[in-house]
Image: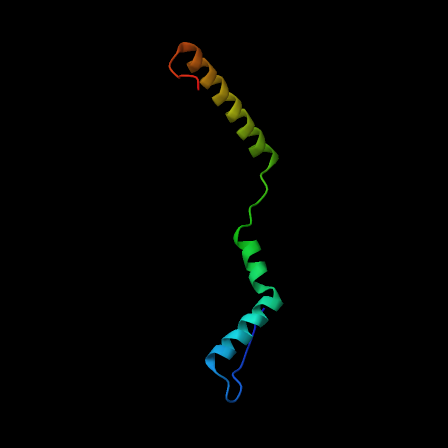
Length: 74
C-alpha cells in the first residue's frame, strides 16, 4: 500500500509533513506494521508438550537439590 503526498504551491515543509503524517495515521499503515512486527507463531502441540515436560523435570531436579541442602529455601 503506497501513500503519496505532493507539495502544493506555496506550501511550507512543515505543513507538508503535517499533512503526510495525518494521512499515514488515517490510513492505518503504522498499526499494520506494528502488528506484523511483533507477530509470534502459535506453538505446535508437540512443542507445548516438550516444554511442559521440561518444566516438570526442572521442578523435580530443584526439589531434589533442595532436599539435599545444595539450594537454600527462600
